Amino acid sequence: MDQSKRSALIEFAKVERGFPEDSVCPVVPLDRFFEGNDDLGSIGCNLQRHPGVDQFSELFSSLLLRDDVTDIQVELSEIVEEDDTMWPFSERVYVAGKIDLAALQELLATLEPDEVSVDDEPPSELAMKEFDLAYSVWWD
Image (cartoon, rainbow, N blue to C red; front, side, top):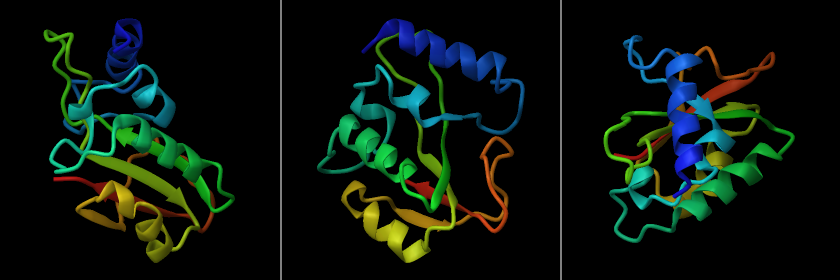
């Protein structure tokens, strides 16, 4: 785990996204969440066969390269600043674009999300173009 990247992520969540003052969980860009992160407990932690943080990062990064995906933001559900062995935890990733829901579900199948659905109230930080949909990808 890269401690400087962890500290930078937490500082970004506090300064740029208002954590913990806001009542909603902050979202951060995909690269900020995954860069320096090797903590299996940070995302998909309830999976019986966790594919690894790198697999999450690579799959979402490849999605972001698609013409039908506009933006991806990772929601920080929990930040434990006092324990420097823990990366901030996420149980939800937001995807914006014109990608079809069934196609997105199929592409994410190896990550075994509990739910992939259209989100009618996505975070304002999610960059969306006209006619984009917002999707919520969630792990319990």
